[in-house]
Length: 298
Image (cartoon, rainbow, N blue to C red; front, side, top):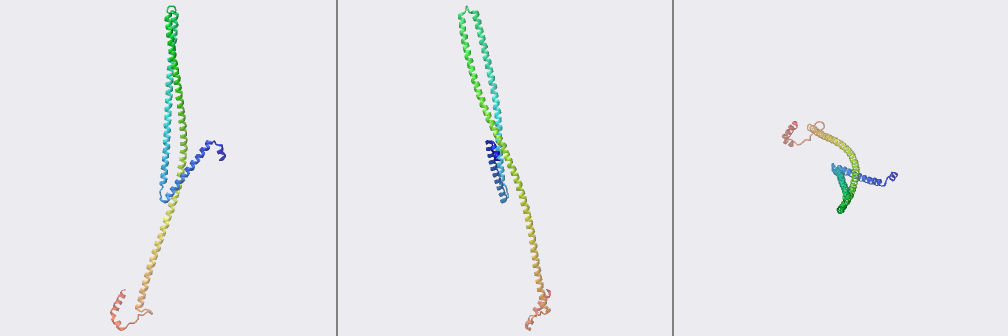
């Protein structure tokens, strides 16, 4: 890679370095966005930071669309300036042609005047010397005026041609600048579009991995819920079993107490009630009978 970098031109190497820096910055930004999204998903279960980042990217994309629109407008302006340039050229050519025709016409007039002067000199030289001299002076003066006018027209034509050339050079320079700007922005648009497409692909892959992780978490939560439900059912069964055991124990204790009472009262086996005094027994006969009746009922 170092050998290839040394073989490349300096400008291309600088552009590659700047591109790598930009890619590194974008990668860091994407990593921060993913980290913030994961933290937000873990804390609050939402992904508003991801939506905000996507909205910012959309705004950035709309900014590029505005740049493209401005480029289209620049192209239209270039076409309009080219049309104006062609119209100016046509007008200048028509004007130069008309002036050339006018100059030709003046030359023809001059030739006609010369011919007329020569003919008048030839036929009227003897009798009209004075008239010829005056006519010659007049023709010379007219010729001088025409020559001066021709010179003025020539100078004016040269000046207008010079102005036309300067305008044409200026317009060409402006057209070249606009074309360079257009090429620069087109290259920038292509690079930024490719970069944003890569970022979008990375975001899609990150989204897919996050979705898979969320699905795993949901599956784990369902398993935990099933375990909790089974544990609750088992605890409920244990509680019912303990209550049933306690109920059976209480019933057994009551049954044993009842049986012991029957054995003691009826003096079954070796169990006998203690004998009381006669007075106490007489006084308590009624009560004893009542108690025996109650016990018999029970």
